[in-house]
Amino acid sequence: MKNVKEPSFRESVDLMFNRAVALLDLPPGLEEKIRVCNATYTVRFGVRLRGGIQTFVGYRSVHSEHTEPVKGGIRYSMGVDQDEVEALAALMTYKCALVEAPFGGSKGGLRIDPRKYDEHELELITRRFAYELIKRDLINPSQNVPAPDMGTGEREMAWMADQYARMNTTDINSRACVTGKPLNAGGIAGRVEATGRGVQYALREFFRHPEDVAKANLDGSLDGKRIIVQGLGNVGYHAVKFLAAEDGSLITGIIERDGALLDPKGLDVEAVHQWIVENGGVKGFPAATYVADGGLALEEPCDILIPAALEGVINLNNAERIKAPLVIEAANGPITAGANDILCEKGVVIIPDMYANAGGVTVSYFEWVKNLSHIRFGRMQRRQEEARHQLLVDELERLDRYSGDKWSMSSSFKEKYLRGADELELVRSGLDDTMRVAYQSFREAWHTRKDVPDLRTAAFLLAIDRVATSYRAKGM
Image (cartoon, rainbow, N blue to C red; front, side, top):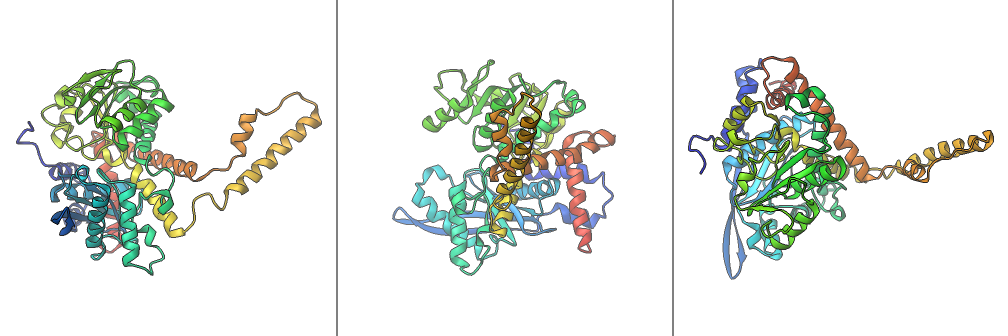
């Protein structure tokens, strides 16, 4: 059971904010302006379902409008409340500032268990919730742009976008009112995998710096590193799928709501994922050791621990028993403020959520730009790139024939070199660049300032400074 002294999620975010802002020379008024949420809207609406009217409660919190539109996901969960959405909105502000996405922070949620409703019922509920937000400009391409979060996905975003278009028939930019849509509804290639892919790119960048890796008492590369992931939802699944397939990491543990699977030789991520899809959980999976209490698997030895589900899973009750030397927060707020202190005292390196899971908002930014420009990425330049590359290949082959040397290009090289980048490749390139530059920008404080003890403080420091700079530019 959770310790009664454990701060709430919102209090944890504020504690971490306060530690970082104390290292900046900001006027008290500006400090308070950045910390507090500008507004939180609570909507209660009824939907006729199953022969009666059911009332639902939803929230949309706007943390900071230092730049607009504000950005943040909408989650469907029975755990949604004002405290949670305000904490998540604050994290969105700092996250966007850290990766230089031109958005303020926002977050929304609907208190509902989506598994208890069929698709038609969910559409009726989603459209009514969207209606309540749209008429208050809490969904708007230039003011407030939601995205998927826990319990929502492409389908819900498509319904919201369509609802906005129905209510704003002359808005040419209506598709930009939400991101995370299906491709056929104005979405962008690579958005579904974006947050998980961002976790992979964050780890790759971390391992490019041997001195950072050494601080975690690790060495080498991601190849062969033992990874335990908590939550094999969209984010956790894509993160470990790519890390196993492309970086050679061993996924030795997978934790889900009904227990955990362990295998020191490495689990087949695709097989486990398919089992969960078909059976609703990991229990009964034949090719691994099953542990009924999934929380205990967080404490198993590994090189990298990836909490990728709910907030507060690493807390005062279990932090001392965490054995992983490196934790990367794929979820929002999975480590409480108290647990953060315990882990840091033990020498555990934490790659913080505001950076680690920023892949989603980064690719959402690309989708928003695509919707506003009304053209897919790569459409104008792809064939021109191919033509220029063909010129080079033709010239090299001509020189080969002229010189009489017996060498030739491999067909696979020619195929790869001659192919112009499509939208997915451009999105991945942009995400990779974003994650690299962001990490390099805040790790510097970790190494150069004695008053910055960890990466989280360094990330908050940079993000708060950027938000403060934006407010100063507005005359505050």
